[in-house]
Image (tube, rainbow, N blue to C red):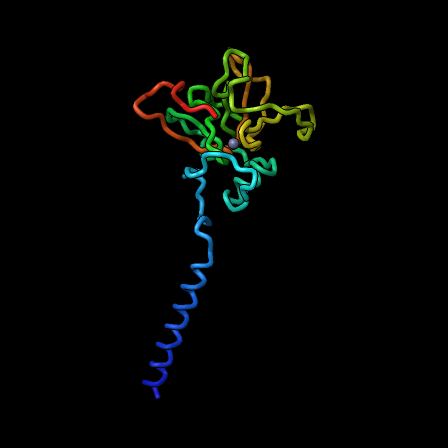
Length: 190
Ligand SMILES: [Zn+2]
């Protein structure tokens, strides 16, 4: 009897293996877990049909696609001081240079200006500003020019010489360290 049961269980487990193999084959290969710290290395261009919910973690999705805000003092880039570039977590566009980063004390990463800004001219930067009254008073939302991802807000109480404070959510960004101290202007502009 026990031998019969053992044989039966072997048959059952073989069938289960075949079934799960079939199931595995039906799952499209592009679905894969994404971690916040790794960013989205494979995404290079924004695609209108991109299913952001599949591409992003739930936290990244709420902040970037639904204009959420991460809990203050919780972001991974708040006290991050490596030299390099902060890119859009959705489309990989370079957004903020580490040299423009400073400690605003507010609980979110802060930047004096966007990458590509020349004096006050942001026409070559990869961010856009949009009026936003959801904060209770007139505010200005900051978005990725390439994919419309919500990044945070910009305020007029920043340090000299720009007077700007870009208050940006860590989860909207992915950081890439600068290699061999190559100049920033070698960074690709989209
Ligand atoms: Zn983007």
